[in-house]
Each structure stands twice: as C-alpha cells, then as structure tokens.
Image 1: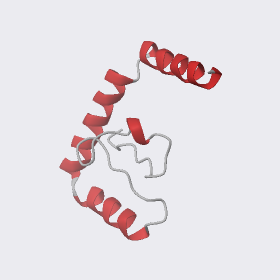
Image 2: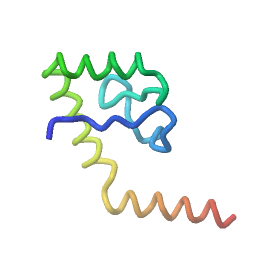
Image 3: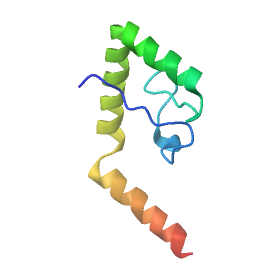
Length: 82
C-alpha cells in the first residue's frame, strides 16, 4: 500500500485516470526523462506518495463501484451496438 497507480499517457484509462498532480499523473510511455523525474520525485517525497495514494484510494472507492462500472459497461455496449 502507499503506491499510487501510474497509467501512462496513451492508456485507455486516460479519461478516468484523475487530475494531474492531485491523484495521479499521465506520462508518455516513451519519455524516459519524464518517468525518471516522476519516479525520483516519488522516491524523495514520502508526503507526496502518501497524498497520491490516499487520493487514488478515495477516487477508486468513489468512482469504481460495482454500480458505476456496470453502468459504464452498459453504455459501452450500447454505443458498440449502434
């Protein structure tokens, strides 16, 4: 525990990945410098790690309930079937 999720910038998770610097950060998969800086920042900032982890847990608990995910899948299926 204590590690925030780190989807990369081209991820299909982009719309639900969060607000940059508050509960996550999206990085380009081929940007080694950005990844280096982000990981180094997390290694050096335990307060930042804890804040991102808490915000991530809160976001998952609030937005990824069974009911919300079921509705999102139903929307997806409706869109695909049109």
